[in-house]
Length: 145
Image (spheres, rainbow, N blue to C red):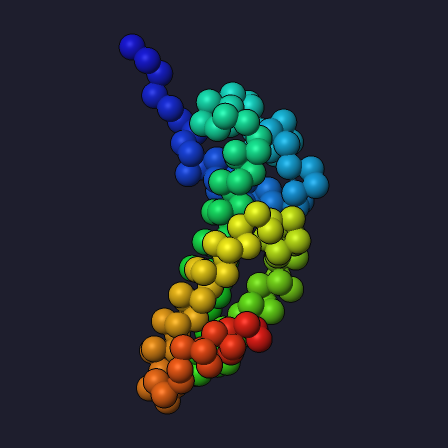
């Protein structure tokens, strides 16, 4: 009978995110991650073809963590004021993640922009006083963040 997988893809993504938070991408190797979390490198290489694929998936995971969790934190009653504050706080509290996403991670520039704009449009739609804004105005406001 085959052994049940103990370390899943989700666990590896969380390990990658935690490692990235602490150390950044400069020392992001299978051996370093395995050592940090007390596992072998085998689960990483059984789930991913190579380290580039793992890095890419961790970067995506980090991106959604930032947008779906960290940028939804409230700092002001007006969401369009709170959102940029949350973005700045994210960069201050998570410099390694910010660097990984916006300095090292420009492979996802278009994906990040599209997702960010969609999230911003939802914010605008959630506040009645901004319903008069045109699509162009919303895009321009979004670019200024």
